[in-house]
Length: 484
Ligand code: HEM
Image 1 (cartoon, helix red, strand yellow):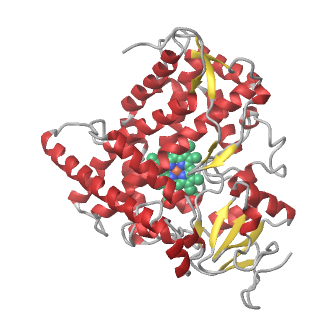
Image 2 (spheres, rainbow, N blue to C red):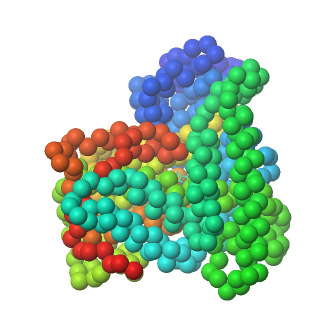
């Protein structure tokens, strides 16, 4: 065990052996970052570990106590996010939304608009019809694909479409002319943002900037996204005049707040465009990934599947379909979702924080500018906190107070503290509605010849830790899906 040298006066967290120039990057090669970091941390017994990834200094918190210090005791010191060189090319300083907003008055105001106006319980409720329509569309697609004889459907694909369409309709409305372009652009942006490129890893290297193709891609993405968003904002302003009484989508709300102008810091069109991107980035893939993991775990655990289906079918006996009125009664479904978020948090390292002031965590110094990851997945699967952590047992939450509201630091799928996910209610209701429908209307079988233990559970890291292989299952209709 060695310490990264930073002057004798600082007591830095322990650090594995490093190579010149690349630092600890080789320790992460070939494995998913949250898994490689967990293995490194447990090998070195380091609840707090310092890594050097090229020119970046990174600290990883891998115990509940370390997470609690970062996100509660020292939350203010870690309340900002790092902005890499490439992200900066796409989002100029001052144009950030909530996700990348530097901690300060403007971010606080934007975040408040999110929690009070965009993602509040009342607003989430206002999109109920959209969600129910999109959930029915998902169920109909499942039913249609096996209408003549039971056959495998690509459930991953259908779930992804459900989450994207439902989010896009809530964010920019149902009348989007060019929905496919919008989605394609958002998805391309997300992919670019999720990567750490050479110039990000070596932030002071001019050579890295010259040899990498990322800067060009980022700039092109920015120009295209900018032009598209400008049109979108203009269309929304025009349709407001033409269509006074319609239900507001999130972009309408942002434009109204901008017009009303009663704010400490003016809400600029640049910020609005970034927040629109944030809502999609935060909302779509997280829910889609989680729902796919849930279905995969249920297939591997027939006892849990049977209990979940039984619960839904009893609660809805005789009903045509599931609505959001029913969701509150589906106790076991809530436990299933919790357990899936424990084993498969879509953001296993949460989103990175950045240290704003040199401070101490677990007695170690963390210098200003350090990037901080909390390995929420490692903590949520750590045998020190969880009995049989690798097993999918929703009952573990039955008589337990542990919840994902950001106060139990062994279970943090939505993060904690000032930067905690503001879209929890929005995300959960999407999950619950679709899951209840999939379990109410269909029995599920594995493709011919496949056994539960053959189901490939390998992860890949995109924006989220999602399934490497699409989930293909055979639906057998139990309760026909109503046609509109
Ligand atoms: C299953 C669903 C979801 C999960 C598991 C999830 C998880 C997370 C996590 C782990 C963070 C980082 C928290 C931290 O740094 O402490 C985050 C941040 C965020 N999430 Fe979510 N999220 C979900 C759904 C949503 C939805 C539906 C939206 C919006 C429509 C959303 C919007 C955001 C935003 C804007 C942030 C950045 C907050 C900030 O930096 O202040 N999320 N989310």
